Length: 442
Image 1 (tube, one colour):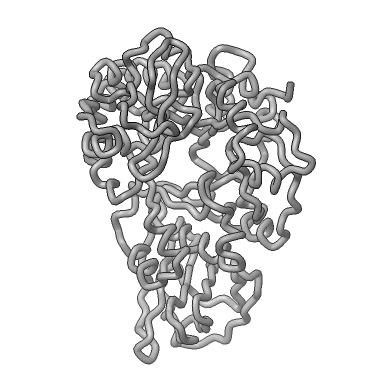
Image 2: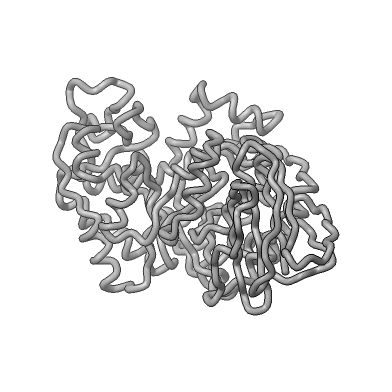
């Protein structure tokens, strides 16, 4: 058996993302499902993704989905003990917070909870597609976990949110999780909502996130709830008590090259409760999707007063997406430019603190053409990010002001290029190609 994660973390505490991050989200810590493992190894549609990342592909390379949870106890690959206390203490030693997964919609089809509480799970309608249901050894035919737009996840069993006892069970589970971490990322958090559950399964949900969150915070007042959420339901979950929600719309406009929408979103002052990202385990790698713009777009994210989600391997400029069911893949050669960029970028962000000031510098539009501009001031250290979101080259000067003073040269963190400056009373000179981003330090 491979070395448990708690030992690996102890020997990897100087990695760049860990040093930079305020919170560490560990995915796949809960006990994995033997049935999920078998299904993943046999499912034809998953094989191309496995084979693209491991050659030769061995059965033991595929471990099963971390979102088909057998039980909320540590997987043997994570800890040798029946709780995550040692992992949590290690994270606390680094002065970081630990975030873990909670999957509210479903459990693994072979979870022992089905044996102990068979009525907590949704019995399938007789009209349900065979691919959306299965017969459990207890004799009942249950629905697989799913959302309203796709067929079910065949290694999962759907919680029955029309049963009020399910909410109480979730609160019990969350009590135990809260003893071992600082918060949870709730997978597909909109699925238990009444209108979504009814659209998906034709039954009325009585599940109430507000009650769940309030009950947990009664005993753990600082415990955080983060929501993976889509379909425009972000504000709904914030109103129910979540601390922050995914901002998939920001990722989508970047991916679709809708630059004016990106600029508008970056200038929005209501980003503090949004979780933004360039990649995660569900999306392709940022370097693969955005190419040479990936570092530029991360620079834009760095100016956004949001919760910034950073994916392991992003700092190396990796391009191969790893299927979540895999635990062993071929190594990928890092991109040297990406490594150098993220070393500087994350080191710069790490210097910020609660007193850092985000502001728009004083700037008169040059020949009627505007650019996106943001400054972040921390003590006597000022970052300036410029972005030309137009289709034409732009140039101009930024007046000298607080934090932005004359320097004989400025080095762009994005490109690594040094720009000599000629002193002028008009201010700092810039010139930007279409969609070019520059990040300077004063």
